[in-house]
Length: 348
Image (cartoon, rainbow, N blue to C red; front, side, top):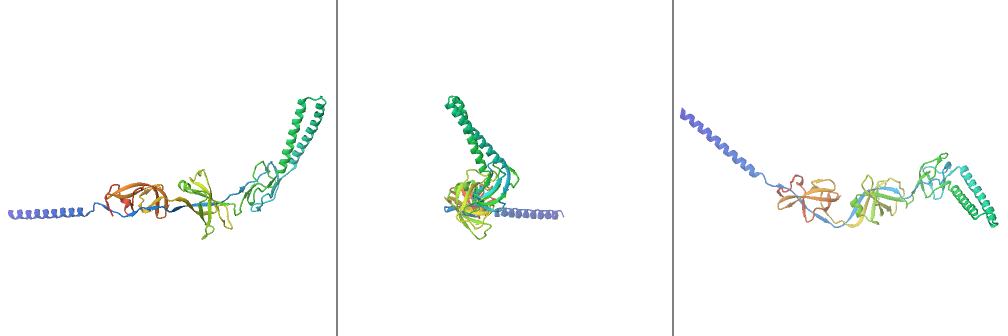
């Protein structure tokens, strides 16, 4: 009975040992089945040498704007034009009540006549050696001052009316009849609306602004005219950046503007620059981390992933133009790049 129990114990021990060996063998085989590298896909780096274009949004503006005002202050007698009217250069827009101004002219003229009489009288006395040279010089100075006062008063009377300094459209009437105005206070706001008055103001980031030059050709598409395109050219580049937008403006004029335009219309602008692109291009899928200006990508070197930091020049649809960071690099990792670590073994 005792030998039978020992026999059963031996058989159980032998079975456990067999199971343990099989489990260890399966674990070793499983461990050997796990690959020691990451499978990725790469794509060639392309060099771009074609002429590049700069695309941006623009706003239609009028190049000619004016805010005419009175030279002197006073009460507005009458305004002859209302908002929305078209005016021609030199057209009368408004006048002042002239009572006070005419009185000033009359006062200046009377002072001039008196100074003229005084000068003649003292001159005769000076010739007769009754008046001194100093007295004659004093009345002569007073005569010249009175003469200039008359000229000023008459000049102010002439400019006690407002005339249009440019041809255009009255976009706002700021003051009306009966109101008191001061010197230089605008009465109207006029905007030029002729074919040659319109321009586009386009805000560019600093890198694009540097590439654009005067006389570069632009293709213009307006939301107001779907399906149509217009041409223009760059006529000016600002030297001061926008205070809040962080962009730099360039001005574009139409070669031939649409029949109807309004200030504030938006336009999609593509400017053909004379500067060669000089960029390398890679797929957007290759970017791992980016802030819009810099990004990280991976290439393969000696069978291992190598992390690179690049500078982005421009987004080109599903590709990215790179200005720095890919010197001597011929391929980058696309599929699988987001899972890589620097120095990790890879296979493609």
